Length: 176
Ligand SMILES: [Zn+2]
Picture 1 (cartoon, protein in one colour):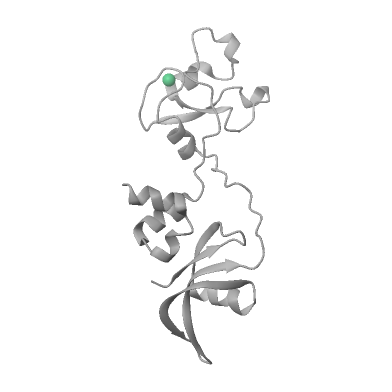
Picture 2 (tube, rainbow, N blue to C red):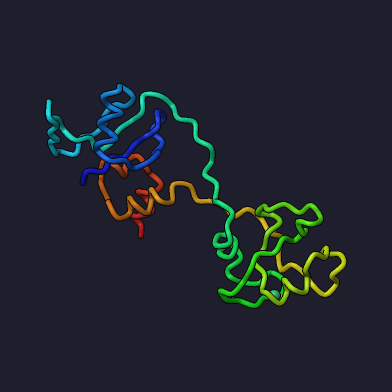
């Protein structure tokens, strides 16, 4: 009810923030109100209509959101499947395809899910010295879906005045 959709200067949805944060952006002159939500907010000194959609007066350059590399995200990417023997389960570890000892990096394209047996077998050896072990696929950085938290949030909210700023999202839920 009191959440505010925050748009970038080019109307690209950025975030969902609280009314308190929204009001502070407004009073600092950093954002303009595009829609009110019909509720009145009172502070000690004044009262005003609570914003529902806010647009920044300046453009925020954002880096593309990056999915953090962690045990959890690597196992999820590899579908909890050992990338060498295909065994599945939760009891998997991470393996550096090019071992760190040989200069392998801790990066998306060098880390895979691996069972303990394969991990022991592979140890610090390089792939070309392991004729019997093969990667089921080349590890890559997973594709990241931008605004995932915002879209799932908005799926729960279904506010008409918000939906017009996410046309793709709007058509998605209308055709569900
Ligand atoms: Zn394995």
